[in-house]
Each structure stands twice: as structure tokens, then as C-alpha cells.
Length: 116
Length: 114
Image (cartoon, rainbow over all chains, first blue to last red; front, top):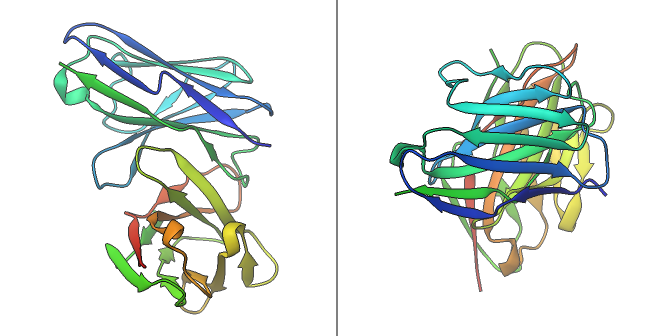
């Protein structure tokens, strides 16, 4: 149990276009989903926390208008990188939790975004 | 503020030998501690967690970790390393008392040498 999927696994896009990444909890309902960004050989940087049916909470320094997060249901959250630029190229990972207070976060396999 | 330190960027160990990956933490209140493993170009996989109870926590793939409150440590251990254990390991902490985000360490690359 506790499987999280991400789609797509990798995407290449042109500068200025928008890219949507989906995160799904396949066998449990996720009250909370998290979006991380991971740079090469670096730890995970939390970008935002999303709760189903409410607005996402963004970490300091993360542009909410650039990284749009929607948590439409208890099993789906989406991250849209708007007007992508080469510096947005990264590995984006989502995680889902049944209960953010104490429960384990279950991670998706990640999405490699390359902006040309 | 909470933080996690993984003092070793890389740990090398011979196959069959015991391994230890170090982690220390700083948090106010009671800590929730986690270990995750990441294989290349993959997401993180949960290994084990400490919430309360026994200080020695057993997890997936034969890994275990010992919670030491006085030393604020949560080192990951395995009695006999496998080549397939080679990966990037992350320690993480949050704390009790309502929702708090999880803070991850910088990761330790484990290399098991055949």
C-alpha cells in the first residue's frame, strides 16, 4: 500500500511554455500533498504544501504565480510550472500523507523537467 | 527551527560488513524521525520511522535505526551490507504537537563495494 505516482516521468519543453505535473495517491486518500524540488546532489527543497480543497501554502521564496498547485481531490494534486525557463529545470518530487502531523510521507518517483 | 545533520557526504563499506549512516537532529519538543532511500532518478522510498516507544526501530530491507535522545542522534544501521544497498540516504525530522513540515538532511551516498 501507499503508492504515489507522478506523470510524466520526464518532460522537455521550450522556454516560455507551461508544464503540468500530476501526483496521484493510488491506494489511499491523501489529506495533504507536498511538492519538492531537488537539485543535483542536493537535498529536497520543500516548495509547497497542499491540502485538498484549499489553497496551497508556499515556502518562502517560492513564487506562487509561477508554480501553480491545485489539489482537486484526495488523490490528485497538480503542479503547473508557468512560463518555464531553463533555470526551472530540475527534478520535481511529490509526496502524500494521510495525516501531516505524524504520518510518513510517501513519495512519487519524480519528474525530470528540462527547459530548453 | 528544526534541522537535521548528516555529517558524511559519502560512506564506503565492503559488502558483508556492517554499515552505519549518521544523523543528528535538532528540534523543539518530541521528535518524529524518518529515514528514506533514493535510487538514481527515482523518488524517495520510506525505510523506517521513530515516533515513540522502543529506541531501536526496525525497517525495510534489514535496516534499523537507534534513537538516542541524549545524543540527539538517529543513526541508520545494517548488520551486513549488500551491493544493492548502494543509494542516497536521507534522514528527516518533524515534531509532535500539530502539523509541522518535515525537514530533510542533505543526504549521504552509500557505496557498497563488492
